Every structure is written in structure tokens, then in C-alpha cells.
Image (cartoon, rainbow, N blue to C red; front, side, top):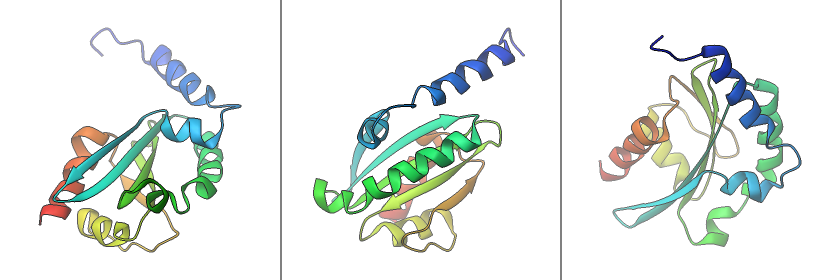
Length: 140
């Protein structure tokens, strides 16, 4: 394992997720959030990574009301939040926005319904996996 202490890494990741305790939905949402623009479509993507499945569920419950109407209120077309489980090597995607369902359905070739989340097995990197799929969907 190339000198990586897996237990220490896992512990550090767990504590990173635990450090969300006591934070507001807004603080959690913007902790790791970036905006992008492709072909006139503006979208934002945040990501929370943890090994704590229950903690990610708590974050999801906290963010659901915060994300309602987010895109309209912030002048973007789509808002996304990746809840990434390091252990299971996958993400659950929360999303919101008028064009979001169509863009995501095309990007990940899956059924997408407004108000629901999307399971993305194997997707752990926003930069290398998630954003390229969104860009391809918008451009395609």
C-alpha cells in the first residue's frame, strides 16, 4: 500500500465527516462547492466524503430543505451535492434545478425523478468522474 496507513486514513476521513457536527446546512453545502458553466448552462457541485453512512444520511436530511429552490435563488440551472461513501466506493447524488433531471439522466444513463436522489456506484471523484459526465451530457 505504498506507505499509506489505511487505518489512519480511514480515521482521518471519518473525523472529516464528523467535523460537520454543529454546522448549518449552508456551511456544509459550501464546504466544498464549486460552480461551472458549459454551453450557457451554469451548475454548482458540492461534495461531502465520509466513511460514516449514518453521518451521510444525517447530512442528506439537513441539506434537503436547504437545496429546495437553490438554483432559482442563486441564478444557476442546476445544483448538485455528492454524498460520497469512501468505504462503499460510490456516491448518492442530491440535485435540484429545472434542467437537472434531463442532464443527469443523459449523463449517467439512469432513471431520474425530481425530488429523489441518484445512486452512483463507483463515482467518488467530482473532478475525474462526475464533472466530465455532466459536461458530455450538456455538450452532447
